[in-house]
Each structure stands twice: as structure tokens, then as C-alpha cells.
Length: 188
Image (cartoon, rainbow, N blue to C red):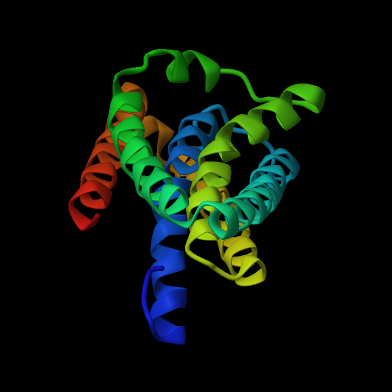
């Protein structure tokens, strides 16, 4: 889907995973400003990474099945899903609920729901990747690792810069989401 060559395919998947991981990065950046322990950072980041690896796998399987049965419909819906999530990334900047959600660190069942909620976009993108015949293993590994790394990075940056960024952290993260969401739309 993303490129004909193997290296280009991995670069394309990594770019897509980076775009999808900015939600997790911005939330972890905000949560990092609450000074979580390293154990908490690792627990939340691992959950985010695992869900972002698992959800596209399910999406790819369903998208592949739909593609085999309804080739043209699957291709159109795959493109529409990519466009939809580009718009969603831009609109999330204006959602003030994220700042409230980031003020408390999720634990237990709330952590699973939190990670699942963050990974729905990966499931949907997995549907479109499945429609285009993308390989599930490489996609899941790339999506999971990129989200794990960016979640940890967001936590650590938030923890270190909380006194410099302060209340503007959520706004700065939102700007990154808008820029990357717009870029995704322009590349379609």
C-alpha cells in the first residue's frame, strides 16, 4: 500500500505508526508532568504499545477478508478511513476533555480501557492496510514498538519539562497533532 519496495514499505509503515502515536505521545507528555514513577511510566507505555500492536492485527485480518470479498468497496472504505482519521487528529486538538483525562494516571481496568481507547485508530488503519494486503507481523511490530517508544518519550519529556512548559504542554501537543494530521491528508 505505502510503497513498492521492502525498505519503502517499512519507512511508510513507520511514518504511519508515528502519525498514529502522537495521541499517545501528547497524553503521556501531559501525564509526565504529574511526576509518575518509572514503574508507572513503563506499565502505561507497555500497555499502549501492546494494544497498538494487537489492534491493527485484528483490523488487518478483517480488512483482508473484506478485500477478498468486496475488492472495490474495501479499497474505497480503506481510503475513507485514512481521511477520517486525518480529520479526527485535527479535531482532537479542540477537545478539552483530554486535559482533564491526563490529570490522573490510569491504573488497573482503567489502564486497559485507556490503552484500548488510544488504539482504536490503529484498528481502523489496520482495516485499510488489510484491504491493501499489508503483512500483519511487520505492521504490528512497527506499530507496537513506535507507540511504546513514543509513550515513554512523552512521559520522560513531560517529567523533565513540566516547570518550563506548564499549562502550555497540552496546546503544544495539540499543535503537533494538527500538523501531522494535515500532512496525512495532503499525502492521500
